[in-house]
Length: 145
Image (cartoon, rainbow, N blue to C red; front, side):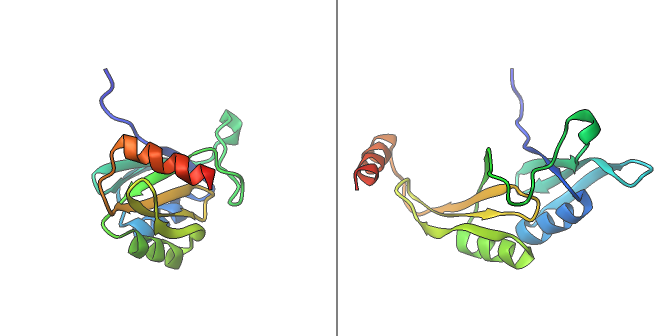
């Protein structure tokens, strides 16, 4: 039985990333574990009801952080009250816009940002309830344009 799912990010500077996530998303640090060298081996942030885990890279153990401009293999979706405001706050904190906020076929206004540590975030809020069938119809129509 699965109890929870936590995104766990590797970054090049965990202390700076914690400050960024606090400024951009209102994250609150729960705790961090620091090596004598100063490298952060584990940190936990509370972002709304979710926990985000992160640490510095440990290349000697095969745990790398993405390059800031590397293609993203995955993204994190934040569902918020006001996507435009959160995106603006993240950009003011140092993120870049990958896709400006727009109304989407799936009933959400959303945009995509890249944080200074190479992670991509989809930030959106609901604008309408859309059934899966209607989403598929709209998706198909979008692809036929």
